Image (cartoon, rainbow, N blue to C red; front, side, top):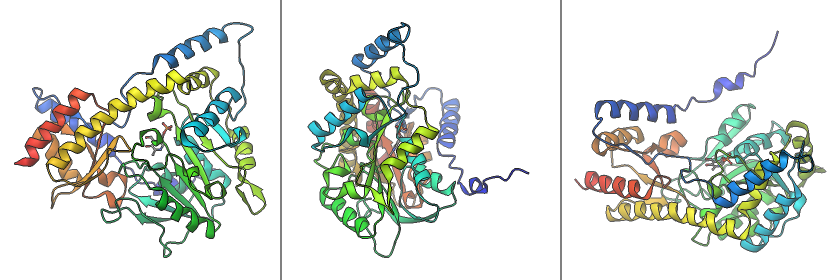
Length: 395
Ligand code: PLP
């Protein structure tokens, strides 16, 4: 008889987005005269830039010709795209990579979850709380032991190495979803030293690197020693509006050799076995992001979201509410008024002024009592939402 992976029963049903959607729908039905502003949007809203859509059109035309047709491509991505990413790292992040260290993916989520394949089940996994839920769930599915390190107001939601929480695989997300906080060079150096000493590995999620404006690291490889202990995941989802187009990349340095095994070779083996590559059309679209005009145009979109984030943080400053994020990230994270839970504040905000956000408790126990707003709505809606919030919370 088939044996089921019962670890799936241990995954918490988050209900987060379905529950918020349900509450918003119920509110709108009761108050059709109020336009609910969703500051809970976790997806981009601006369209793809013209360089990208042109590249997609051209690539699809090519695919309809005998000469330009492409069948299976290399599982790890076409050289034309890997070379562009290599140059991007050299030019804008000041990091040198070998093209064979770059693996093109259909987005960061799959690679972050699939990387678990190359590590044994007896590793101890260390994960920050609150955080992007995929790290936790993908390890629970395998029955792995997870230890949590706590993001709190005291550490600015940037947990640092804790010698009392020993582990082998350490997940870091910077700039962070949901808190928007970003590690400094000095903080990351401490992490790299700590993990290297233990011959462990950092799985570094840099999905929001393009939002960094404070001078915080955009790549873990900006820090000395990182190529000996870190894998980096990146995504074009928030950088270039690829949430529906699907493309990302993972860096597995060749220096990563553990127990005589090269992680780079193992990941290549894993991908060539279980993944058949990203479509030619999408890789041409991704290539266009890294062209000179492409990079200029995606910056305009990122600047638009960042202007929204500034409006949000300005309002919180005016209200004397402490927050993280907004500067290096499209997320703003703040403490809800005393005595309220994250969900109570969700209801209070929705019923009090028709604005929806995301309860922090949905991202981990340490998120209880906090709230996330995102900068992905329109400028006009963001201005209106923040003025409604200001009026409500000033009372
Ligand atoms: N990592 C973080 C921290 C995210 O917030 C997200 C998406 O919200 C992802 C990864 C997934 O990105 P992708 O769309 O490339 O799968």
